[in-house]
Image (cartoon, rainbow, N blue to C red; front, side):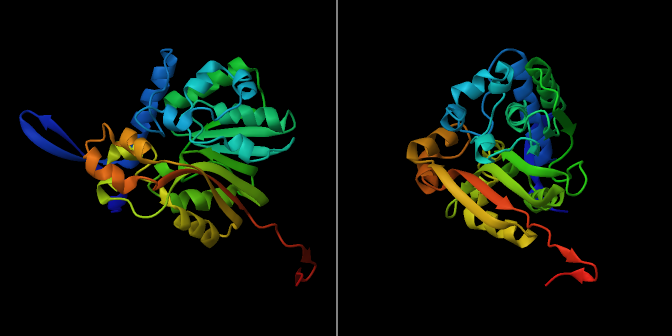
Length: 298
């Protein structure tokens, strides 16, 4: 059994202290189901991939013109750490897939950019988020959009199906990142592009941070080391790998995200200052080689 896919939670049952093993996926799904319900009730989704106050990471990620072009509920459900639609340099007619699409903000923005001859898929495992995203699609009037239910470790699309994969602070939430990246490579067309926003780690962080479930669902505890992220992409077959840090989280940010984690803020904050960063991650699936009648050309 892969223990790194599980966390422990505790509760009281008839006076007995019980330790129960949950999968990380179950905990993440509960968190984001709650976020979708909050948006449906007319409030902000609260803290997802961010600090105690999500504004620390999620504020000012989208231009006003972009925000004005989509339903407010899609913006309220945004729990990302970047703007992958700007990063991806989408072109008319392309097919785009958003891994962990949530309320649909990046899918809807992508659909507008690829135009009626293109298509934007959103993939999410959470029924509540999918329902919210489909409502947002209906409000937007966009028809070149399809939301799929599934896991990012097992994408329900055929090989070589999409031109671009985007994702907004979701890959770090997976307990099996190797599977996510392999699947991304599989469904991309030859020459297809990976363009994601995510949290990366620079240097070592305390084991207590890595084991903290509140920090996992905030996209921190499960984040990959920057070098490891690049190495994994290359080992799968991606080329032209680039990781561009655009925001580094300093001491006050560290104090904010540790505030209700149950950890000793004064002791841990100096150890994680400057260790986490929002980053743009780019990579490309190699272009297929031309082949001669008798085999591939040299």
